[in-house]
Length: 293
Image 1: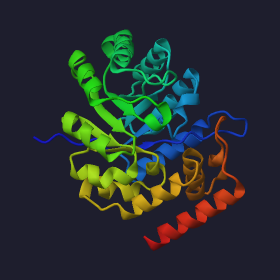
Image 2 (image 1 turned 60 degrees about the horizontal axis):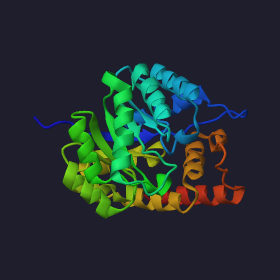
Image 3 (image 1 turned 180 degrees about the horizontal axis):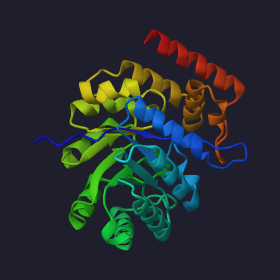
Image 4 (image 1 turned 60 degrees about the vertical axis):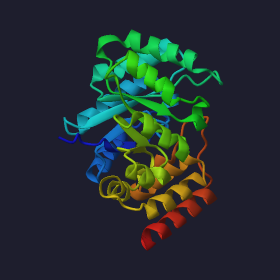
């Protein structure tokens, strides 16, 4: 029997109130919206969700709010972003205790140029301290943000030490050679694509889907690429538009545009909102692409 593929997960944006706190009702409503439009799961506290800047108490409240709003069988992954081992363990334990289906685990990101031995020891200690509840780890390769690479060999060594724990790899490098190397070495687990422009090619080579920011905006366009082999022409066009701007603020502007709620635009420092001119141009171009699609 063929195992089901991972599918599409929205790397949910994190909305804020005027006071700068996480807007939990708005977050839960948005999560329901992306599921209704085709996503098969949601991911909290990822890069698009500004997970690097969320406190442990905020993370717990976000998970509870989303889990309460969504159907009971919905898969919820949680991004883990920390450099201190104890912080990574605390984030992971809180998510797993709350019922998370998986952890999207980034490497430690302060020290650069770390070798595989050091990274292996870091992940190994994190995994040991989480203990018997550890499961559903998706290794998160996003060197554009962390400046830390996760080699196929490092992941193979961790998989050997921790059989069954690592269930996937999310490659957000935007580099096709890297995606190919993961597919070749780890095609027996879920290789997921973070850069939506590579998704059509990766799906044809055995990838299992995506955790991505565009799923906040256009899940209907991504689902056919993942499940029906679509060419993703409009997906690529939209992604190129978004990455021509500061990415996270741009995604939030478009989420708010579609929801008729400019309150989504708010970002937490050190990010800055797009200027009024940037927002206007982004929305105008987005509407033109969607009208022509």
